[in-house]
Length: 205
Image 1 (cartoon, rainbow, N blue to C red):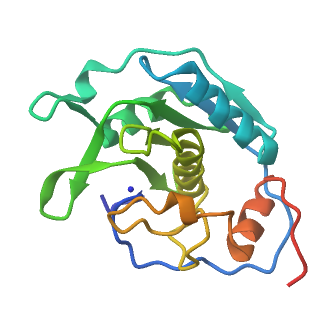
Image 2 (image 1 turned 120 degrees about the vertical axis):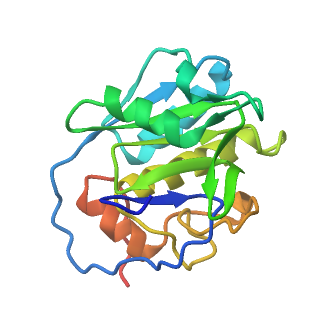
């Protein structure tokens, strides 16, 4: 898977939004995506996500691996707080950039009355940072699933809410792992991302 200036969109939390419709194709000022691995994640996982993202968003940088911030570790559950990781990444993110943190560690956030809810990913909607974890993913499909979690959370940073189209990367996971059913961004989500410099072949609709 805070309601002040920004809205938390969690990959595993039900959020009652639908895709915002847009008929405009004018591009906004493009940003740079920084892929930020945390210590422990396999190089293969990082390189796969980076290469797949680069196919649809060429303005992307792969940073060197960094250690986890001590403040993000939740000792009671032996995992890391995703919201704390995002705040850490946000402080490191330069103007005109957004950062996607990648990890193989278990991550969590607060969900309603549940103080510590395990998630696959978390991101601000919109925002400057997000995080994706391979910890809860299928071993046999881990690379592709991690890419889909990462691109989902990046979509949130770009202002995309959860989408009702079940095959869209922006669908709400609703407490499950439906990534194998996700094929692409839907038509409406693609239109919004195309405005921001994402490279798609937009079909006639």
